[in-house]
Image 1 (cartoon, rainbow, N blue to C red):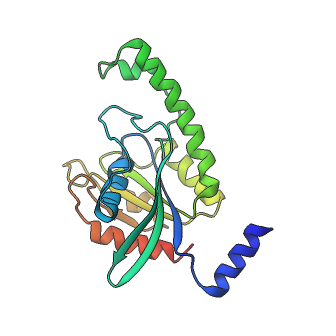
Image 2 (cartoon, rainbow, N blue to C red):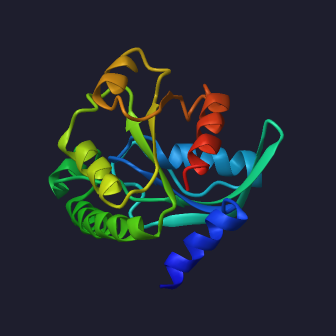
Length: 208
């Protein structure tokens, strides 16, 4: 009842200005890299560690009151970086990266728990940035599952195709796979197209 009243009052008195913005996507798509870049730009601090090994982020991590100023506008966000969503986690996959068996099994267990935590946090999100790897086929079970869960909860979505600095990047396939959503191609690592990204974020915030 309180949530309904809060939403009703929000419509009367204007949009909320402390938006819980979640970063969701498969492992190693660049969720933490993007969240780090945003937080570094506006708070001077990063949100978490990144690694070439999948599932580096295995618990939800967040940064409160990230104030973003863009083209004369200002909004405050709570940045929520989540563990990568996967349909299957096998500890043997981590062995390929040189991890010892005991550490690999521990990482696999933590990654599985992280996925459960990510899904639980969905109910608390005002809007979500779905971060996908621009070099991979976007039409996958994991990606469709993530977006399906967001649609079911009626959470506003922005799809980001990350890693456009790589030769294999293909933005066109994202537009054809998700024609109903805004698609922004960026490189979180290089900081490419961040102006366009911020345009899209402020547009997304209007839907909250």
